[in-house]
Length: 222
Image (cartoon, rainbow, N blue to C red; front, top):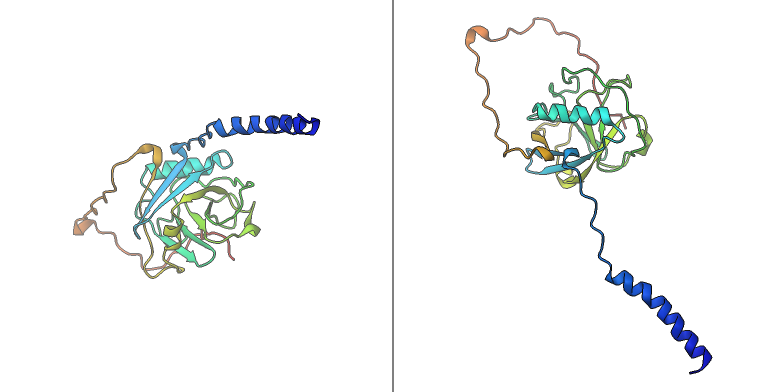
């Protein structure tokens, strides 16, 4: 065999050996997602949104979401502020952007997660440490908001359902969260609780004057 032919054969064998080993090696399975950090929202439009929570960068906000979800706080709440090409905001029991839970406001947890499409962040008032229960889902990238609001998760699946949320400030026919739950809890199918009934004597009376509204919890302006 000629020297150059022998050299070519040796080189070919040297290259082929790792390639064959690569081909035979099994493809590693993706890391399993911790269901304790998957937030599910069943919407009145019929869609389901799966959100991966990030306790590694926003532990306080993620813990708040889990606590309120397990109290069924979000069940029945509307997306009260939905701006096309920007974001969809919900999580307010008043339904007008002025409300929150009875738990104390949280300190800001600004982090490196960007405001890309599908990012989920905490709405707040002017004060940075005023996030409570409200959140928003980014419809289109808004990177200028990075490190100014606490991003605590991102939509893994169900963005078509997010895109279908009714627009408006507020929407004329707002989309509701029928049921919110943590995936690891494996709850039964959503069953709405019956509306409470009040005897006529116990019906609340309406105030004659209009009290000043508290500061609005909000996602950022465009």
